[in-house]
Length: 360
Image (cartoon, rainbow, N blue to C red; front, side, top):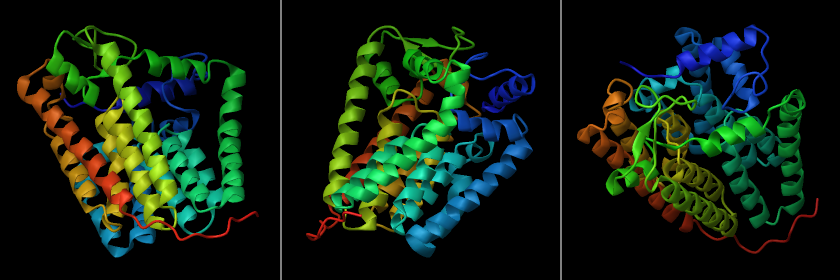
């Protein structure tokens, strides 16, 4: 059996067409702007493939602008390296918005850049982490007033999109509750640790059906391990923000910081869905041209390893086949190694020369 999110998208689109309001009338796990690709394509594999093709081309154009021909041509490898994930999930949309934001930031347009990151955040939450990097990069370069204006633009975008759903009811409380209460996802790095410790059990269909539409591990040390990884994610993000601010004199610091914080979000979070590689690979193509070749290569290797079980052999993970659990652990170790390698490349970016602070 092959697994993807097309059925989930189809149900959500049907709910919309029937006049139901997300969050208030049915549980919707994504931010509101995710309704755009879901509303346009739903569970139609061809329609979603065409939408994601457009997003992939946008990523490729942005990769050229940020990393030159090498990064652009590396994007050609996206379909074989990521597999079916690029056409059965909408994750290339926030990836495209994030790369467009980085182009705008690199070209001296931070307000427009954080506007794009606001749109990305309201599609999937992870671009908010890149926003922290962008603000640190601006502040570290002494561009305080620009950072302030850009942050206001980000907040305005989030508010304009989010307030109508908050007024209708259920947003963001229902979405936040969903993500806080869901168990450690079975393919995440915390899950790999729980597999070693033992004592946890598999949740989700068909083993123990629940409302989270995925499989996880619960019981035993699951709560403690999830907490420790959350603390590690916060610490890693703070460290990357400081590193970026201290090396804000170059565009490379912005790009490597964005790649590293996305790796941290993926490798240390309690949820690691296979499609998250679609966030990483466009950034990896850009990072390759800016001194993070080890991190980029390790990320590509992690994506290829993911194809060992997803989508065709996913239920080998659910039913705890030893080879599948080992493959997941190897993939997660590769992502952690990619994070370490990229952070090291970021730390080696030259420090900026002293410059007067901009007031306007």
